[in-house]
Image 1: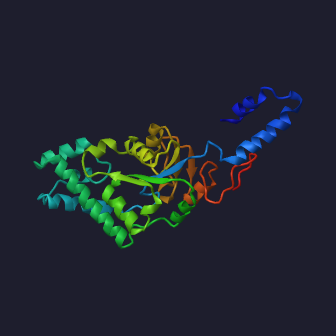
Image 2: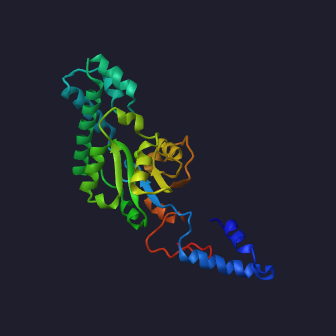
Image 3: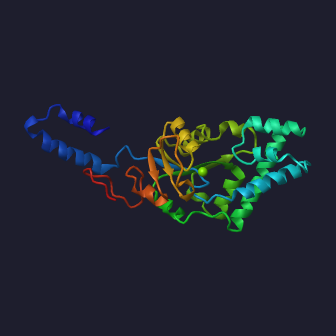
Length: 271
Ligand SMILES: [Mg+2]
């Protein structure tokens, strides 16, 4: 109920000469019992470039070359390899697979498996690490989830390696099949699944890409664009609800529940 509706609900039968005083008292009683209903009920994060650092693009290039090699294609056209590194579209997979008489699903699965293994190695040896402000999200007093366009195997490995599995009520990456290419962001598919898993309706989605903001829009939820160093000069084509520099800034967004907050009272934020 917003404030105007709240005022309306108290108008009937109240002596108008004392309405202002009564409204003020009533509002305080109402808001002191529970947080404002406009609080986000959860926070869902993109993974790469938000929670953990990006890997060097050369790692993904090398992994793609290895995938072709594993499939018995020892001398692929470099342009074909390039098409399979990032931002892969289903048409690309079909075209490239056709050039080597490969099954598109097999090409994509092996590409994903080799890329996931390479990233797991990077996590294991410290080339891919959580950002310094990662622990800030432990102060968020609401269910949290992950929706990444990275492989599910990569996300699972990262959370296990960081001993952070319990921090997130759900964590989606892509399954290693071409179906996932039709489901990944900017489609809202995995965000909607995460919302269903968490049983939430008004999450804030935090991402570092245009596709994150567009996917949040498509899911009908608010978004926060995190402008880390690799996005310093990026011009967004979408319009996020919030823009933040790091994960600590999330705690300053009034609608993000933070552990230790007092109930929202009398219009004053406690932080
Ligand atoms: Mg990202």
